Length: 347
Image (cartoon, rainbow, N blue to C red; front, side, top):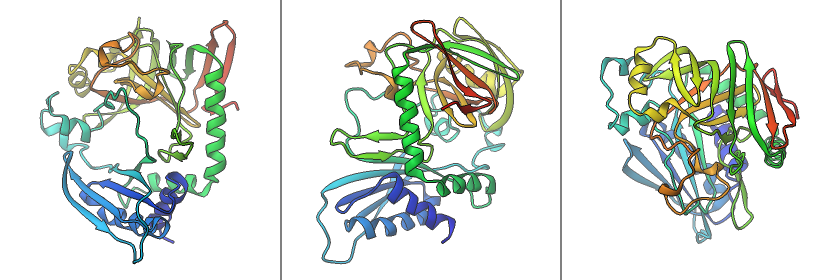
């Protein structure tokens, strides 16, 4: 079984957990249509319902392809959504430096990975959904990392992730510190927020995994609380860099020299504040800019009533910290908790 076939089986059966009667819709860029067709073929054997592939370019549908099961087929009894996100090493790296990216050019900003998740209030997706990465054929490092994860028992890993998420949500954490080589970074965790991961449960009780990084736990940081410094790998306007960031009173006050970073940060002052943090074994990410509503315990009725700690920037910068950092937490009673040692969860 080739890597695409194996990956497609994982998406259909382990992540979305499709059932008979699920009408799957796949959104993809044109370059990944062949992989989408592989997923559609495998999904048809499970769901026995027409699968749609929506080919998208710059956010607009180019065409819709439909794949029908052999008659007699089932009528749709539910729906599921899948988004293929291409993560090509050479998509825009180097090329984007030859043009000036404007803060209003959301198409270019999205391709560069600097568009924050939209703030969606008052509604949740009521069907199984998933976003998965697709890599260039010759990006062996990315494919090997993906294949290692596929080779694990995903069901068991999902249970471990769910246990960690529940434990952290019960711990009443209010402050964290990330420490390691080139890093001593602190921030507050608002009490009105949740840790969340790839484990999803619909109102109906149906469960699914929303990405291959289902064991990644994310949470909000108070945008006005960050202090200290960290060194991180970043991709800024298509250029890979190692940057040292320094914060005071929640605000980025200095960073390593970088014309690209200066340009990006000029788009929005709130991009100089933390939005949310993500933790996974051997991966610690500080996301500057836009925050995520999934981490709010209660969704407000409109954006004007979002809490003060929530970062509403339209833009984001993904900062990958050294993978061997320690993560310490303090709960509401002042008791210290050791969450990660050398980049690994302690439980």
